[in-house]
Structure formats: C-alpha cells, structure tokens
Image (tube, rainbow, N blue to C red):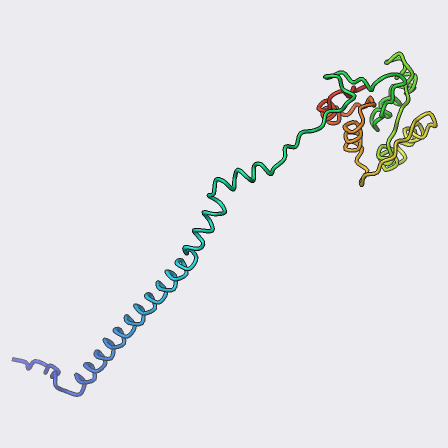
Length: 213
C-alpha cells in the first residue's frame, strides 16, 4: 500500500511560531477590550458629572423662586397697566359733536383721480353732498404720493395745489398716506375722510365718529 504523508508534529519550530502569534493576538484583544471599557466608563462619568452639574440644588431653588412662586406672579399682574384707549370728548355716545359746517374734508389720492375721471368739481360736489360749506384738506403725504406718481397724474397734482385746498402739515416720518390719515382722524375728530380705497375705508370704520365720503 502507498505510504501516507507525514503529519507535521506539534513540537516543531513552526508550531512554536503559531503558538506565539496566537498568544500575541489574545493579549492584544484583551488590551483593546480593557481600553474600550475604560473609555466607556470615562465618557459615562463625564456625561453624568455634566448633567449633575447642570441640575444642582441651587438651580432647582432658583427655578422655584423665579418661575413657580405664585406671589411673584400676582405682583407682576398688578404692575401691568391696562391699555384702554381714551374716548374723545367730542363724542356723545357714537354721535360726533365736533362735526359741523363748514366741514373739513380730508381728500385721498384716489378720490382726486375719481373726480377727474367723472369730471366732477371737488368743492362743488362736496357742497351738493352735504348741503353746507366744505373746505377740502390735503396732507403732505397725499401731495408726496401724487408727486411720486409722475406725469400720468399731473392733472391731479394741479388740482391738489389749488389755493382753495387747505394744506395739513405732517410731522411723522415716511410718506404713506393711509397711516397718516388714520393717525390724524384718531387724534382729531373734526374731519370727514373722502376716499375710494377699500382698505382705508375698513380702517376708518374702526375709528368711531368719523364719516366717510
């Protein structure tokens, strides 16, 4: 019968090399696992310490004193004043006693344009509407708006510069006419507002005692 190949003995130099490499691997693995554990324990300790530092007894006490103290809340409520708008002395309930002839009518930009389109004289049309003498008033903001609109509205600008129109000076910043008119009629109840602007009408209706033409 043919001879079997000889198996390598477990006591040779090759076996010694294998044993040493296996031992090195096990020691390296053990070191890595120890390092990993140490790192994990360190990180856990650091996180726990950080959380403990944030939520300390002092912070809890401070939170209770500042936020959860009911007495402090009552004192804060007492300090806050009520913002109640002052009612004008010209109003008798919803009737405005400050309005009377000669009527002062604040004219808006689109109202002048509407009168030009329908070929109406502003002052005559106002007198036909109210059966009394009327003084058209124009603010600096409306004049600035007409000047900004350019050549297309030069006729409206010429009408606005009519000497029969009373010029109202503006002391505020900016040239937005709607805000200017609403602020003026809120302070002084002696005006009628002539406008075709829906948004401005909606805002004026919230102010009591101011008629819209």
